[in-house]
Image 1 (cartoon, rainbow, N blue to C red):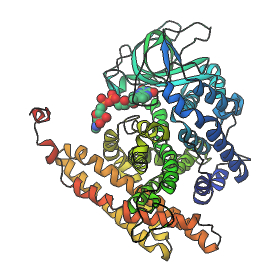
Image 2 (cartoon, helix red, strand yellow):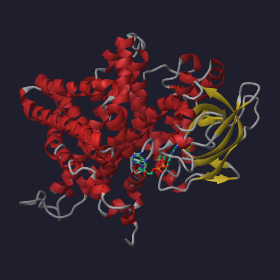
Image 3 (cartoon, rainbow, N blue to C red):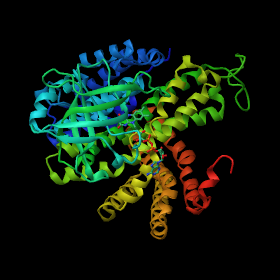
Amino acid sequence: MPSYSPPLRDIRFVVHDLLQTERVLAETGAFPGVDRDLIDQVLEEAGKMAAEQIQPQNQASEAEGCRMEKGVVTTPPGIRAAYAAFVAGGWSGLCARPEHGGQGLPQMLAFVLNELTSAASIAASDYFGLFAMVYHMVQRHASPALQAVYSEGLASGRFGGTMCMTEPHCGTDVGLARTRAEPTADGSWRLTGTKIFISAGEHDLTENIVHLVLARAVGDPPGSRGLSLFLTPKILPDGARNGLVAVTLEDKMAYAASATCQMAFDGATAWLIGERGKGLAAMFDMVNAARLMVGSQGMAATEAAYQIAAAYARQRLQGRAPGKPAHPELPADPILCHPDVRRMLLGVRGYIEAARALYLGLGLEVDIAERHPDPARRKAAADWLGFLTSTTKATLADFGVWCTNDCLQVLGGHGYIRANGVEQLLREVRLNPIQEGANGMLALDLIRRQIPRDDGALWRRFLAELETEAAAAPPALADLAAGLAQARARLAQAADWIRERSAADPSEAGAAGTDFQRMFGLTLFAWQWLKMARVAEAGLERGNDDGFLAGKIMTARFFYRRMLPMAEGHWQSLQAGAETMMTPPPDYFWPDA
Ligand SMILES: Cc1cc2nc3c(=O)[nH]c(=O)nc-3n(C[C@H](O)[C@H](O)[C@H](O)COP(=O)(O)OP(=O)(O)OC[C@H]3O[C@@H](n4cnc5c(N)ncnc54)[C@H](O)[C@@H]3O)c2cc1C
């Protein structure tokens, strides 16, 4: 059975040395008592819980899967035990308000918790993350009366929650939603419609489930502007069963332990949360949080796969090291001697560590956006999150698939065998480029909404951040600084190219989208690697290293020399323009054409 060792050394490096979390949180004045010691204690305990109580059930729960009978969903016993351990440890209320029984800790710690539990079991962490997001949505958008009914249950883990957007005919294009809401005389609403693919739509983990549903109030206009957000519980406050039921459990490629349901709402009692007609904007608070969670699951699963692959590469004996045997006393050398195996393992490190730095950095921005006393600072952090979230999700999700795939390759045929655990991780991460906004659609969001936003102010801020980082590099990292400056210039050139071309032909933005998104993602990682290398270099100058800081710089160089150049390939491909893909007529795509 695979095991998982929480990468606390690297997480502490990011949290303390890179992000200076203690100092930044102190500036908010919102978290008295949250110092380095407390943060370390939380990391330690979260890691222990993930490795000892969440991970051991992961493989068995996937094999067993959820079951459904007459609308009742039973989760695997391992998932129930993992959920019970999570709740008993107080983790469900980590960031919830103390008046709801929560611990009131920073969101950045929930980001770390999410990485650790996702690496241990993505299926289990899906339940944990979703329920916490629904708690925060209720705080942000529901009326005080609804908050009084649902906050404590969600914070304590007694209640679960869902996000209900997708319908059979409407996924990426949410504005097509047909679920309708009719008002009643008492101010509540009746929801009727079908939602599909609803994570945790029905299960046996909690005594109630709080569904957040996008629906169209009768008479409201078509399209996304006509959508409102409703809260509809499985069990009504008077204890009666509400008019909603899970009708199918999806039979899917992975995550068998996560109950993905088709839900039928048949006049279900619901309450409007937020403003009528502004439901999609409200739901986007949750979508953005979910995007970061989905992206981080790719990174977390890859960490779990890396640990298996790296251990395997050290002990599997096949072939000989180039030149002369590394271990003549053995019948063959460990496969770690082969440059191609090293390429894969280092590529995975190049992804995971940059992804972690980026993801936790955004976690800290969430705390600033929510709790900083200065409104200008809050707005700047919220804008920054808005600017970077969709590309972070897409990049972490894509690399998660490629890198978990490389981990499987390191194990050869033994990676394809279930017992080693990597094939499960690969099947699981395949969801991430699809869920919470298909990556191709997010590429368009980057080009059409984020870059032009506020007259390009955030885009210019991003380019300025890269410039500042390159300028701050010490002489020992001059090669990396030059690499970042070049990637920055190329990215800016690509953005200009797309803007000019798409003014004449709207297909150009869509045609360039994925290449541009990948250039952007690689540049984001390059930015993180130079920051980490700068901090590592400063630590080395202080003279205390056991190899960790020198290792950081080695991986940074690997990233710059072997991974960042992929951006140039995307630039070449992007310049081929829309013509190559828009010329074939629709009939060309029929298999017999
Ligand atoms: C396991 C699982 C769990 C899920 N959990 C939830 C949940 O809890 N709540 C919920 O509401 N939904 C959930 N979903 C739904 C998920 O978010 C959708 O599958 C996703 O939004 C894509 O919608 P779709 O599947 O209908 O694909 P479609 O919208 O039909 O798109 C198909 C493909 O077309 C392309 N495409 C579509 N539009 C564009 C565009 N504008 N630009 C470029 N390319 C485009 C993309 O490549 C896309 O992958 C879940 C799905 C799965 C599989």
